[in-house]
Image (cartoon, rainbow, N blue to C red; front, side):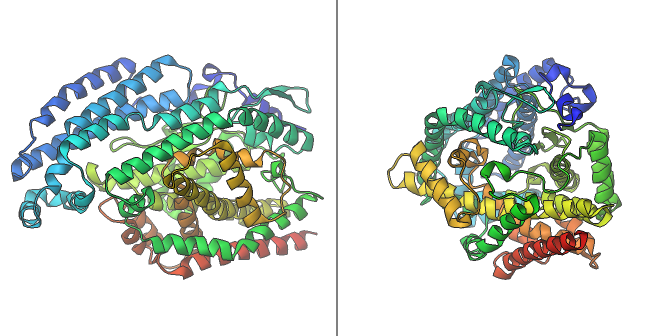
Length: 606
C-alpha cells in the first residue's frame, strides 16, 4: 500500500509547496529588482577593469586590479547562482530564463574584458615573474593563485585568442541546459495509477522513487514508460553530448593539451597513477560488486533481479519520514562531528537553506551550490524515504564544508576541488547509516543502515568508475574522428554492464539508455571524484565512529582547507596518500566487511 504522505508531497507546481519547505534566498537579493540593479552596477565596473591592460607588470597596478577583479567575479557568481536556483525550481519561468541569459552575457563580457589578465602574467619571464610576485609583500597573499596561472604558460593563448574563446564559451554550457530542459520539463512520460487509486504523473524527479515501490508491476510499468520516452529522443541527446565532447576536445587542443583528460589532471594536480590504481582496484574486485547484488536478490527473495528492481529498499520500504523527522535524525547522527560542526549544520535547517519538494518543472536530482559570499542552497526532491534522509545529509555536508571554507579563507581561495568536496558529503552519509545500524530497535532497522552503507559505496565507487570509463571512451571515440551516436552509447553501456556484472541483473530492454539522464557527462570527468572520495569518506567515518584519537581535529582541519592547497596536500591533513594503492584496497575491504556484517546480523535475526 502506498503511503498517503508520499502522495501529499506530489505537488502540481511550486505555488502549492509550503513556504517553510522552500529555500530562502533573501540574503542574496531582496527581490528581482535588486538583482537587476546589482547587475547594472557590475556592468558598469567591467569596462574599468580593461584600463589595467598592459600594466600588470607593476606591483600596485596588479594589486588594485586583483582586488577589483575578485570583487567583480564574486558579484557575478552571486548573480548567477541566484538566477540559476530560481530557474531550477521553476524551469518554465521565462523571467528566470531571461535572467540567466543576462548574467551569462555579462559574464562573457567580464571574461572578454579581462582576457588580458592571464596572458600578461604568463608573458613574464621567470625572473620577471619571481621579482614581481615573490619580491612584493603586498602580492604574497595571491601567490598560490598567481603561481597556478603562471604554470599554465604553455597553455595560455594570446590576448586576442583568449578573448575569442571567452566569447565562444558562452555557448558551451547550452548543451547540458538543453538536455536538462528536455528531460525535466519538456518530455511527457505519461501517468501511472497507484495501488490506492491515485494517479501520478511520471517525471524525471520521481522515477527513482516509483522504482522503489513494492509492487513489481508499478516498477516495471513506470520504468518502461520512462524508458520508452527517453528512447524516442536518444538521437537528440547523443547529438548534444557529441557537441559538448567535441567542444571540450577542441578547447583542450587549442590550449596545447593532448586531451581534455590531460587538461583535467593538470588542473586538479592529481597524478594519472591515482586513477589507474582506482580503475584497476575496481576491475580486480568486481566480484565484490556482484556479491552485493547476489545479497540484494537473496534479501528481497527475488527469483530474477531486474534492472528496475535495483533501487528497491531491502528493509521496510514502506517506512516513511517527515521532513522534520529527517532533520532530527541527521542532527543526532552527526553529533560525533563535534560542537563546531553541529552549529553550522543547524544553520542549514534553521535558515531554510533547503528546497525540499518535487513537482513537474523542477530540476531533477539534488545538489548544493554556494558562492564566495553566501552559504550554499540545496535543491532536492524529498519523498519521505530513508534514502532521502541520506540525500539531505549528503548535500548538508557540502553546505557545512563551504561554511568552514568561507569562514577561514579569503575570497579568492574559497573554492574546493571536486576530488575533495565529496568526502564532506559522503562521510555524512556513512555516519547516518552507522547511527541507524547502532540505534535501530529491530534487526530490520539495523540492517537498513548497513544496507545503505553498501548502496552508497557500490554506487559511488563501482558505479562511478564504470560510468567514468564510459565517459573516457566517449572522448577517445570523438578524438579518433568519430561521432557519438545513440547506437554507439547504447552498445557501450551494454558492454560495460556485462563486463562488471555479468548476468546478475536481467536486462529490461531500457538499461542501455541510462546514459541519457546522466548529467555528470556534462561535468568534465566529475564521476571519478565520487570514487576517490567514497573510499576516503568510508575510512574517515569509521575512524570517527570508533573515536580514534585526533581524527576529529584532523577532519575539521581538512574541511577548512581552501584552494590555496592542492588536493593531495589537503588529503595529507588526514594522513592519506592517494598514490598508495592500499588506500583503495582498504576501501574495498571496508565494503566487503559490511557485506559480511549484513549477512551476520541477517542470520541472527532469522
